[in-house]
Structure formats: C-alpha cells, structure tokens
Length: 111
Image 1 (cartoon, rainbow, N blue to C red):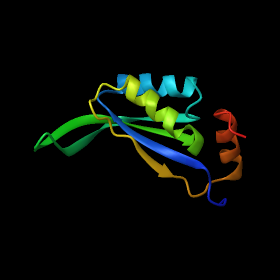
Image 2: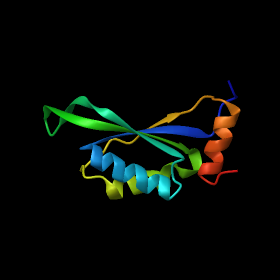
Image 3: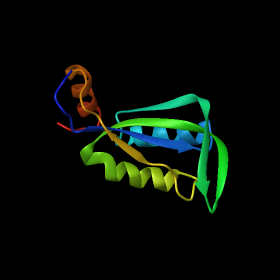
C-alpha cells in the first residue's frame, strides 16, 4: 500500500443509467476523471427532501480524480446533472498500488 495520496473517489447518484453514462463519458473525455464506473444495478435511495421522506431508484457513478481536479469535476457534473441538488461526495484515497496511482495521474494529466 502506498503512502497517502492526492487522489479522490467521487460518488454521484443519477436518475438513470443513461444520465450516469453521459456524465461519465463527458468527465473522462475532458480528463477531469481518469475513470468512471457506472454501477449497473439500481440502488434504492431513501432520503429527506422538501420536508418529507422520498425514495428513488438511482444509478451510482463512481469517479477517480485528483485534488486539483475536484472543483472542475464538480462544476461539470452540476452542469450535466438533471437533479436540483445532485449528490457529489468526495472520499480521499488513502493509498493504492503505485502503478495504478501513476496511471491515474497520467490519465488526468497530473504529474
């Protein structure tokens, strides 16, 4: 396991698989994320919204990026997302294989 990194995993739930794929292709194409995983099985989300409990079947989008790209990635996700307030959660990557982390940096033009 490598030392603490400058990389993050970003989680975003989407209305549909098509929306998740659209966002994934856009952010990887702009090199804001090195990789985006669209989780194929729907997730059931139960959440508080506008003074009541809501439920929805959503798709989870998981993206790998760097500290330097998080803000720009968020801006692009917000531009493309259909929700009024989309989920955008950033989780620090504490470590990983050196080869993978090197690839991640190269994929998003971070050296």
